[in-house]
Length: 192
Image: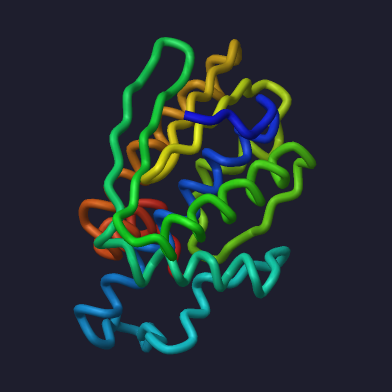
């Protein structure tokens, strides 16, 4: 394995993995389920995927998330909750998806370093603390032949709890697709 990033850059990478996985799940659901409706006129736009856009996200970042959504079936994920953080292994069997995953993750690591929230529409509020307290996260990332190994730790109990929560959210999205995103949004009383 080759370590390509500083600890600060890795913090952003884990955030990106979360965003990317959320995006991958949403696209897969669109691909397989056709147009979904949520009553009150809330229907999914399967072509333009506006939920992947953000108030502070670039078109390139949204496009990378779209690649991840479309290829979510090629993504596997393992999470180990540590007493002070998480260790995740995220893989893809598709080279284009893997490339988008790595690129998007590095971009998000930079964003956490700069406390620069992209404010993606479907983004979990669990990520808010990472953009507020990015300095409290120590991260490392190893790029492997088939994906990424990320370790994130903190001395901040609230950040540790958020790392655990977000890791579970991402895992749910990779397992259940957009259904997991919808369930999380319903629990929060939000929509996209």
